[in-house]
Length: 123
Image 1 (tube, rainbow, N blue to C red):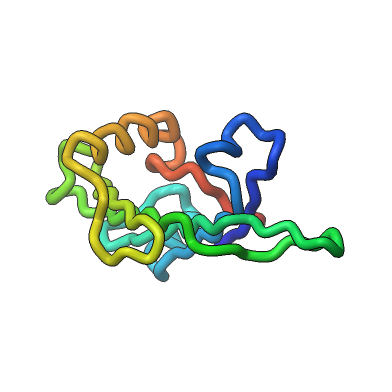
Image 2: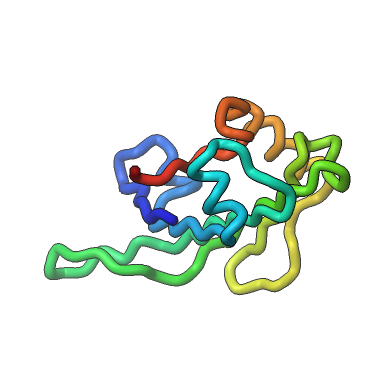
């Protein structure tokens, strides 16, 4: 859906710096168009290190984490209809606890106007 970078000098660089690729399944793609994401929408946020090369180009470095959101209003009633999970480095085991998933939901609630999704796509 989108690619962005957080570069050195940005206040979030120490924690979230790097290249961010955002992927969406077809249901989530439709949600990006309408601003309302239906049950079954999946968004993946792939965060990679930013490798700055000697020739003034930048490329993807190793993976830092993959964050995933799954929309299921019944299953995730306590977190605004979204389930949250985070996979560190190349792990296939989720790293979030119930408490940290609720913290994700609290932060994402700041985007209620876009169904708790921060990212947008270019028209």
